[in-house]
Image (cartoon, rainbow, N blue to C red; front, side, top):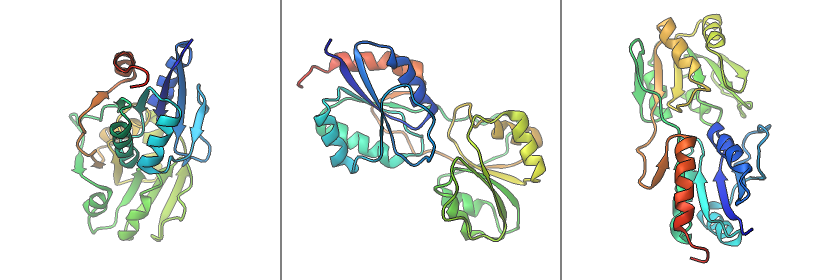
Amino acid sequence: MDKRRILILGGTAEARDLAARLAGRADLAVTLSLAGRTLDPAPQPVPVRSGGFGGVEGLAAYLDEQAVDLVIDATHPFARQISMNAQAASAATGVPLLRLERLGWDETQGDRWTRVASVAEAVTALGEDPRRVFLAIGRQEAKAFDAAPQHRYLVRSVDPVDPPLEAPEVEYVLDRGPFALEAEIALLREHRIDVIVSKNSGGEATYGKIVAARILGLPVVLVERAAADDGHRAGTVEDAMRLLDHLLGSRKRGV
C-alpha cells in the first residue's frame, strides 16, 4: 500500500495523543518531530525525529525529501518560531499545514487574573514590593525575572533552569504534569505563595494551579497568546482527526 506521509511537529500531550490514534492506520506513515529541548522526553507511539530542521529552508527540504503529504503543527501554543517556520515551509512546498492548538483557559468567577502580552510584561506586573512568586512558565524564559530580584521565586520546570536565576532567593522544583489539584494547593500553601505567573497554555495537565489559585484567592499574572494566524486549525485532537483526512484527500501525489 502506498502510504500517505504525515509529519507531526510535537512536544505536547495533544501531539502524542494524535500520533497514538494514527499509529494503527495502515494507510499512513507518521513521524513525530521533537525539538530535543527536553532531556528525558516521554515515550512516543510512532517513529521520532529529534532536533531542529535548520529553519524554514531545512524544514522545506525535509518535506520534499521525505515526500510528506501533510504537516501537523501540534507544538506548544507559545512555540511561535517553529509555527512560523512551518507556515513558511508549507507555503514554499505546497504541503498542507494543519495547526492543532489546544484552546486557552477562560476566566471564571473567583479568578483574579492580570493579563499581559509577554513575559517581560509579567515581570513588570509583579510590582516593586517583594512577593513570593510561583513561576510556572517553564525554564526557557525564567531568566527574565532576574530583572526583578526583590521577589522570592519558586520555579517549576521539567528540566533544570540552566543557567539558574541570579535573583538572591530562588527555589526550584523539577516535575512533569499533569498536576493534581490537591498537590497544587499544598505546594502553594507550603511555599506561602503570593502570586502565580503562568502562560495561558490551556489544557487539563497544568490547569490545577489555576483552580488552586481560585480556591486560595491568589492573583495570577497570565501571559496571553499572540493572535492566531489564518489557516487550517483544530482546537482538539478530535477536530484534527476530522480535518486531516480532508486535507490529505485534497492533495494529489506529485502536486
